Structures are given as C-alpha cells and as structure tokens.
Image (cartoon, rainbow, N blue to C red):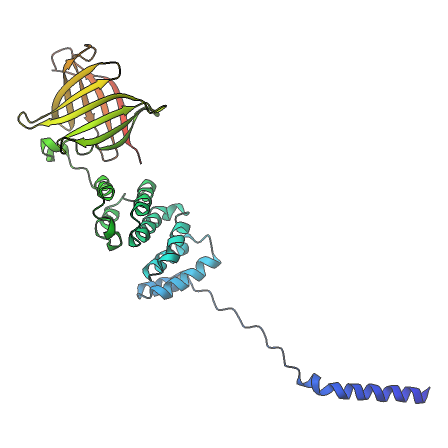
Length: 316
C-alpha cells in the first residue's frame, strides 16, 4: 500500500513538474480596453464651427448611432456628410432626418440638393416640392437658399424650378402691377372648394404668347371637362376680357381689371341670361390661394351683393 502510494505520489509529482513550465508561461489576461468616450453635441458642434466637416460627421455619426432618437444629431450627421462631399451617404441620411417633423422641410431640401448635384432634375424637383409642402419657404432665408445655393445651379433654367421660386416669392400688391400682369398668379393647378368639399379641379395655362390664359374646369369625380374659359388682355382698352363656355352650351363674356385690392370682371353678354347684372371678383390673392366671388347688382353697379363664394387652393 505504501509502495503503491509512493509510486502514485511520484507519478503525480512528475506530471505536475512536467506541465508546470507551460502553466507558468501562460499569458496573463489583460483587462478589456475601455470604449472610447462618446463625443458630446457641443464637441461635434465645435468641429463644425472650425470647418472640420469630416470630423464633425464622424462625431455626429457616433452620437446618432448611440442615440437614434436624437433628431438634431441625425440631421447634422446628414448635413456634415453632405458638406464633406459624401453625397451617397448623405442622400439616405437626409431621408432619415426628414422623419423628424421639426427637421423635415430642410432635410427634404438638402435631399433635393443631392439630386441636383447629381443632375437628376426630376428627382430634385420632386423633393423640393415635398419640402415646400412640408413648410420649406415660410421664411425669407429659405427663399434666399433657393435663389443662391450653388447646389441647385443645375435646376436654374427648369420651368418647374422657376415656378416654384415664383410661388414662394412675396406676392406683389395689385396696385404695383401693370394691368396686363394682374393674372400672373393664376397659371397652375387648383382645387375649387365649397367649404371643405372639392367642387372642381381647375387647370390654368398661359395662352396667346403670355398675353392670356386658358382655363379648364373638370369634375373631380371623373375628370370630365364641364367648362372652359379664355382670358385675354386688350391692350387698346387696357382691360381683361374673359369668354366662358359651359358643357350646357352657355357662353358668357366679361370685362374688367383691378378694382381696389381685387380684380373684378363684369358680365357683358350672356346667352342664357342667368348671369345678367353679375360680376366675378378675385380677392385675397396669394401664391397658393384666392377667393372667387360671384356678385350681383340691382342699381347698375353702384352697389354689389355677394351671391356665392368659393376658395381656390393651389394643388401640389
């Protein structure tokens, strides 16, 4: 037993001795390196302030990755990517920023700038339209961006871009306009509303070499045309003439021009007589809306009474 025990003890000692050098040589486990500290928004802002767009993009990127609900970090990550020239990454990030309501208008504008730089005109115009519908253009600063931002240079000659700039430009007072320019606000696509109900869809296009207008009124349910009108400026008489025709065969002619802060066109002829002693009045005119009233008189135009009124709103 003892011999056996000694033998076992000796073998154990040899085994331990044989493996001891390997055990001693095993590398010591180092502590895991500490994660790099997340930059603060103030530090990211400071990088942008210094003109380090790439550094700012990296900082805002880390912050927004760690804090995906930080709307300002997401927006400025997209902006600094754009500023540093990484348009491919900026394109998608601008759309991420547009998901936050407070940044949506400008984020969509920046998204349009990417497409304009890529000379993708249709996509750029679509995104600009979305930006305007979301509220872009509600300040003079926004209009300044549209007029001067070099990112948009590829769009300058596009008629849609010019129309959008005109739409956002301050509406001049009627008294400041030459008589032939009174209806410059009118071309485009409109909804004619009775309260909240869309009663007609109205399309207005320039005619007669920009000296007139062609108006088409359509049923919103099936798109069928129900009436059409031609406007032309009579330079000799310095007045506007409108000829209106309906699908029921009625034809009405009206003439007129500026009347104070409105435009009034009085009936001259009416094939059915139902519009006799009436006039159409355009008032409260802005780039995106106006009021159309039908008024009647019983004293040869000394006084007028409103018989009906509709609101026109520009369609996106």
